[in-house]
Length: 83
Length: 83
DNA sequence: CCATACAATTACCTTTCGGTAACTTTTGAT
DNA sequence: ATCAAAAGTTACCGAAAGGTAATTGTATGG
Image (cartoon, rainbow over all chains, first blue to last red; front, side, top):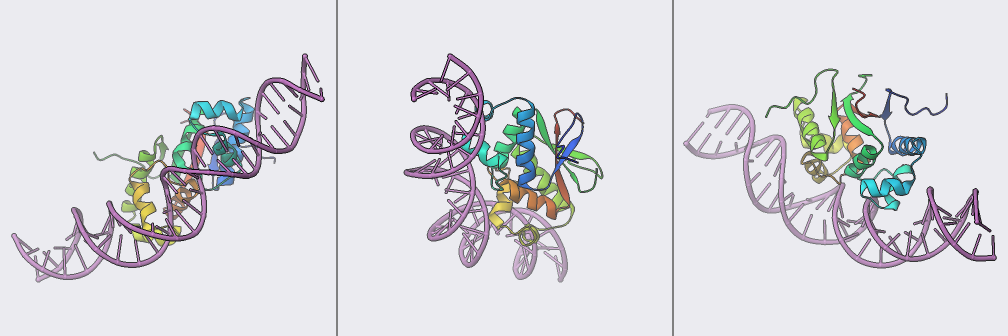
């Protein structure tokens, strides 16, 4: 099965920064947005977007929240294996 | 005052870094763990735990993942309003 | 060929993080 | 209530990573 990151109401479990980066790029492209579109809305620089989508582990948490917000996504924390 | 952050199989939506910090502290204490316990297991310094639990927005994403892992939690991303 | 748009990288400066240690609650036993 | 131990917070420093702005690919189109 190819990397299907999310569909309709399904959720994507994030285990690594690479998961996050791949997922963000996938969603951004599926919404026909450019990196620059996100920069303005999420109050960040282009370098951040590049590094985030490349899976850099040290990206700042709040900035990730901002980007996800722009993409219409939200973060949820749950006990492992809650499915 | 007594916010109920999570119970059994329920999930906690994270909108801000403060949400994350409050939640992490709540879970850590509910599991009778000290900050020092987490330091060793999550390979981080004391300063990080303090700042994370205080809701610092600039904490690094991967380190957050490490701490959540130690607490038996996982991060999920979903479309807003999927709950 | 040049211009435009998007993506990725580089340069410069600022900020964070870990280690250790000091200092301040908080907890618990007598 | 007092005292001691444990837990949590803060401070200093050097190493590492972050942000912005500018630069350099990589296509596509006039």
